[in-house]
Image (cartoon, rainbow, N blue to C red):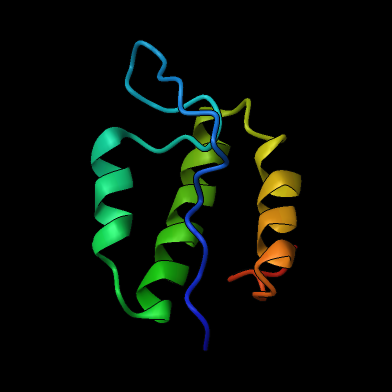
Length: 81
């Protein structure tokens, strides 16, 4: 299994509560994703992030951008779109 791309979609602006407006990750979560080496762990992280986006709301733009990123890197997304 190939390395899963970072959930970051290169927007990188934080809200007052510390979540990126592009992907919903906090600075700590961005650092954490970089330390994950196994694709299974990365996939689990992305799944967790999708749940976080659902709870926070306002992240419908993320999925199409992330799917394009995965396609560009020729990697199957870690979830069924």
